[in-house]
Amino acid sequence: MKHMLTAIAVATVVAAASFADGGEALSPQEKRARRKARIEARIAAEGGMLQKDNTANFARVVNCQKKVSPDFIKDVVAQFNTGLNIYVEVVEMDSVTDPFELANKALSIPRTGIAAIIVDDDKLPTILSAMESGWSILNIRHLQDDLPPKAVYELRLRKEINRAFAEAAGAGLSFNKPCVMEPVYKLSDLDAITFPVVSPEAMSKISQACAKRGIPPLRSDTYKTACEEGWAPAPTNDVQKAIWDKVHAMPTEPIKIKPEEKKIEK
Image 1: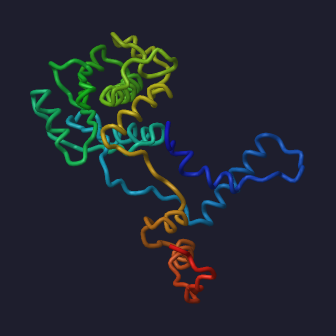
Image 2 (image 1 turned 135 degrees about the vertical axis):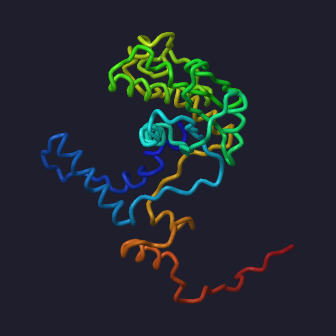
């Protein structure tokens, strides 16, 4: 996947921070701990990490129900950004009865490229999707038909939110295991899935679909890099202020333009 968050956010920092451990006999755990500490120190010295504001489209999870708390949905969706590395937002919207009107209403939210809509309805199937139009509807009503324990119900919700989002983005079924997009035809099939998120195969499909619908990959980097590229906000601490002042300092000497040493013939 292009521009994976970990690659784009810290790859440069990791490379710069890595060096030999001086021949010391260290366990793998100690080496990882030292390397992690060096990376964290380098990031701190460069003003911490920033996420660049998105000026293009978003993938949106549109919540139209009251049974499941918005905080639970936001917690599930927060994991999308880590794995899928795209700009995803949760928004609240009033529901309407007709599913096509509901989909059009969600997609009409400004800068929405993909919409996974969550409802609580007695008529709709569990997931209704139109991947070529960039939407899906997850109906949470049927996930409690067998009166499951709370832990089972919440795990079902996590899986189905991931599945509905993936279907809106065109991922479809995956026969690579483990993956939350394995075929599901009944609740026991859903419960049997051991992996509550999408696999790399499905991630790749989602990334390609998002790119076609104007949703860019997340951009995250150190404050120093953001300053150098011109997208950093005003500093909020002494470290960031020192970086800001250095990057924005005016040159102390005027630029000297030397005369041409050799005349260029036309």
